Image 1: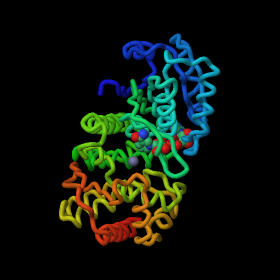
Image 2: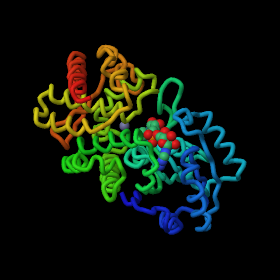
Image 3: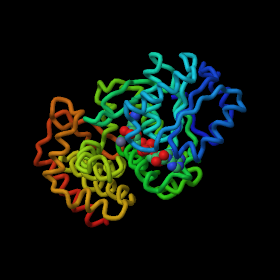
Image 4: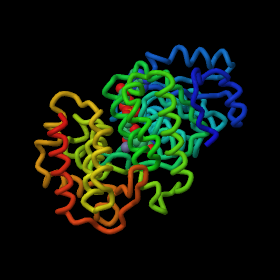
Length: 363
Ligand SMILES: NC(=O)c1ccc[n+]([C@@H]2O[C@H](COP(=O)([O-])OP(=O)(O)OC[C@H]3O[C@@H](n4cnc5c(N)ncnc54)[C@H](O)[C@@H]3O)[C@@H](O)[C@H]2O)c1
Ligand SMILES: [Zn+2]
């Protein structure tokens, strides 16, 4: 999609880019405390130099900022600042800022344009692309929201240099996922340059971001409203992951960490179904073995959790259609499909057990 721009420095020519996309130079810039501190002065200065009118908003850097309470406070600040429909919103940060910023943009004055400026690997490759924006409800994550496509996505991979290593690995889970579901060559590329990407070396990280963003954008373009099952393949490893995240009370484990473990389970499940052979299974596990976790995380959040509890937790996920678990399986490395039929609980548990054996050996 031509409105995803990957480059360094991506803020160069910002005035021209806005003009090309029909956006007035009147921008509400949303940061979290970290992105404000790290990049705020530079970004605001660049915008002022380019003669933008700018209003700045800052939220605490945590998942709980994706709330109606925070949105309500920000609406108030925007009304006070005289923001009307002629303005747009630039969301500078990770998925929390992007989701909240998109939610506010979709609802404020019945909708103003949003420009996404993702600064985490997860946001650059996943959350900023595809137009899903949401806040959380006490009864579940991401339950209240919109489809609100960004007018532009501005990605500067050099911003990742300050990102903590744990966040980098969390984002790598989605990067590797794109290889598994859609692009065998890309999977090989990520496997060969895994640490180059994690350590933000040129040109590897930029290339990985570009290709990941392209897969996501392509899938979303072909199945925007999740009708054909194609967009659902983005959830490879995620049915398991949601179970681990829920068991941990959505704390203690990053989404990407849960997805990494979930993909080990999903590979085994694909193998149990006879979809992939041992060679692909081992190759896939080889890539996933490159991930590092905080001390004891694997043990406490996965290996020591009874598989039956994991299964039960997977079953209680709020967003499930008609109560049956749906799984994305691999047909081969680089090709995923949404498995239509319900899968017996015994097989799911068996794949979790296999994944435990695998991960015990590797760590
Ligand atoms: N809309 C979607 O399609 C979609 C998809 C996946 C995830 N999400 C959402 O994304 C959120 C998670 O996003 P995330 O993983 O980016 O987390 P995040 O936004 O919480 O960012 C992680 C941490 O990194 C900090 N940070 C951001 N950029 C930095 C940088 N360049 N250098 C140093 N620190 C930096 C942030 O301040 C924060 O502390 C969740 O709320 C999830 O629901 C949405
Ligand atoms: Zn994910």
